[in-house]
Image 1 (cartoon, rainbow, N blue to C red):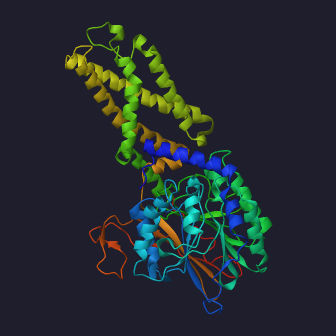
Image 2 (cartoon, helix red, strand yellow):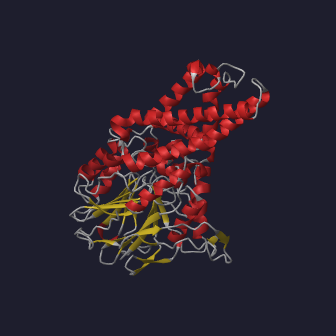
Image 3 (tube, rainbow, N blue to C red):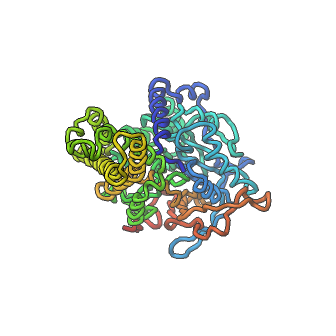
Length: 563
């Protein structure tokens, strides 16, 4: 899994993201692709190879993948099977088939897009999982923000130029697509870029697609991000354009034909439903680290009448998982190196004047006297405080400045106490003279070790309290844990009667031990039976069934939310 609190990786990613956003504003790659690939017809899966009408079709939706091997490969292995028997909580079993279509629903690689990144983190797991299995499905993909961090160059090269990444045939020529399905169903995927913006050629493309639809046709609409949840989970005033663009597409272009909205970006499963049976489903569990489900704290009823029906993991489990931040250092040792160096820089100007016994009592401790007025100490302290106030989540609202200040004071207090203890040990206990190289080396080493352990511990405590008490820092509090478990994807079936079946597939604990397969007819790697804690794919909730007439699904009105 990506170590999101690795300072070096964060700096590299921030620079790439800033560069991509600047380039995206000045030279939108989608406009160039529209010129190179003029208006294209939808990919038609409503007919078979002989031109006859298809009676049914299966396809899979996987979003937010390409992070850790164990998580990505566990999902790929489930997707690749010819058949997959799924059991729900009541013990009912459903026989499902591997899809003819595979949809990557955004953020197909982490932390930033590159050809090598896609190959190593995404395509290799899928190529290994599909070996010796069913015929490879046709791949369609939409980009998320991480796919855009190289200006969409790698995404277009792999998925929009007729290549066969991981042996998967591709048909789309732009970063958005339309697929015609049996019985009047359509599958559409959009590209909202980094600015949550829909470009004019894309609007014209979907207008042309909509003109081919009949009045009774229905749409499954894929976005990389869940616009319907942004007002609740995003900080105030953050990225409202996405919701406006989705509403524009739905009301002005697609004409209220959308029965199912699909999105990723949030790395969990969450389903909302309205009284008409329309579905809004987040299924971002393709391989990336887990996101919490216990925020927002008051979002069971969305503003547009959609009610929360299910989530995975449960709200209670999500809250418990957050307590793992007490072990922040275990998951983020490089962050400990950073805080160790920071603590040394913070208190060393004081230590230089903090002799023990050989100097006056005023300067014998870095915790008192004129030492605290050292200009270098004050400068580093100011940078620390301002940095942590800026880091504080806008979800704190008016308490943001206070939250950042308290966080900074915790680090400052810890650093000063470590410095005080180091001074006493060096002078009073060990009797090392001041100044001396031995004393300096010992003090630097002990302060670094203190910062290595205390800095991450304080950060973990801050993230735990922020999320569980205030609903702030949901991304940071769970990215720090790099949890590969609680994965999910959607298996979707249009049956012979035109009904749409959505099977939400969850993997509670992914496999962590693998062994080479004994046959070339098997996937390249199979689960090692010694990993007895791994769990098989299972239904998160009973399948959602939408009638061709868009009537409410069979399980409408029954909430399955564990609190």
